[in-house]
Image (cartoon, rainbow, N blue to C red; front, side, top):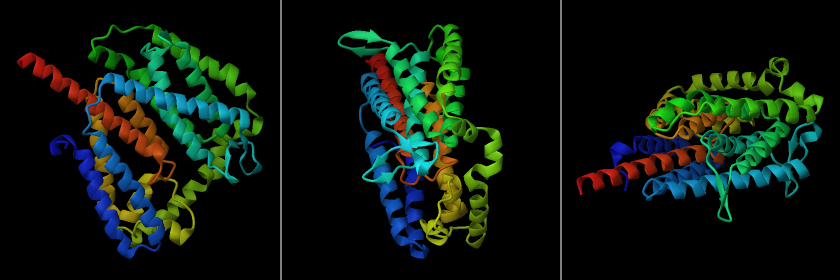
Length: 345
């Protein structure tokens, strides 16, 4: 079992889960609240189990490759078979006759895209048939970016931009921490990636999609009416500021989502629940800066930005970021312990 001092973020998640479960007693939508609770409990248990395993670099590389490959297959399928969402210019997929929300699909692509960019900056090759290829990372990166542009989720793209900027600006800092010779060619690589997006991807998007991504459209539609919904959420928060209106209640009362995980936690679990939830994320983020892997804080930055625009109780794009962070931290902790044992043996 993980040491309590080393797993404070998991402990705060667990306490928050208990508080959310208690809030079912006064929830207006017990069915929805129970569904959210079971989803969170499932992921917290998975994270707890992952923190007890002996992860190494090879395990991590296999896991990251799985994220990249699955996202690329999905992206290519979307590019070829994507359909219009609600008849508008945004692309989506239809599964069992149901249109999938392009915002959620785009959010799922943020982490794999950041992984590909990180591997390019660190010159990490993909090994196939005993041969190493770096160009495959560019294929993974390009297909995911094109799919995200077709999905036209502003929150997803903003999360990707923030995570990518972190990778670009802090690359040298982590390279020096790892005693790796800093290579200025990553700047050229970054410029090449940006130019590729500007000159090869964006011109192939239709005008309506480009308008949706413009600042003018964001001002006009108030972030797809998010500002209006957040105002309603604030009014609900004032009715029960300490322990909230109960998990699942906001959708039960208003029939819409808040589209902001931080706000919905505050509204439905109150100030106490928000403090527990935010503390777990803050602890994890602080730990990420002590990591030797620049990918870790970049994943968290991208994830936190995405859930600022989406509800994520039961969404893998939120929990995948937390899970990967725990795995990376566990791997580095195991590595330190192994080195200490060698020193003292």
